Image 1 (cartoon, helix red, strand yellow):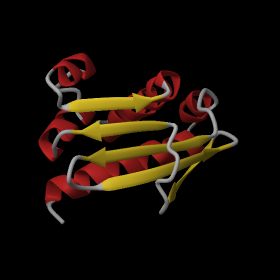
Image 2 (cartoon, rainbow, N blue to C red):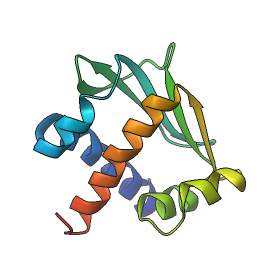
Image 3 (cartoon, rainbow, N blue to C red):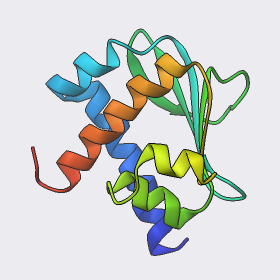
Image 4 (cartoon, rainbow, N blue to C red):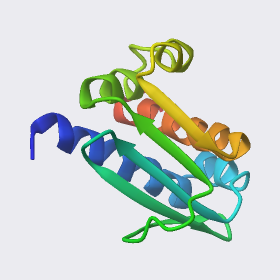
Length: 123
């Protein structure tokens, strides 16, 4: 595993942890519907997250996701997670595909933003 891949995994893990434990993260998690979110890099890492009763946990199965975040490559993923690339620009340039329930994607995006703030000492 590369350093970039580890950074990606660590950031997604932080987002899940904050959704479960942080006061602001819990408020954001309250907006999440039960189901699965798949966060993946095309031809690379896949992380499956189960949401049940506003609690998030990693699971092995990716059956029947309600939402999918698919990053085109590791560099695009890290730029998005580090706020060096906008979601709009990444979507237009096909570096990010958001599929499934838009409300679920939007709420999870806010949790990813919270993880960015924590990872960079802004909170």
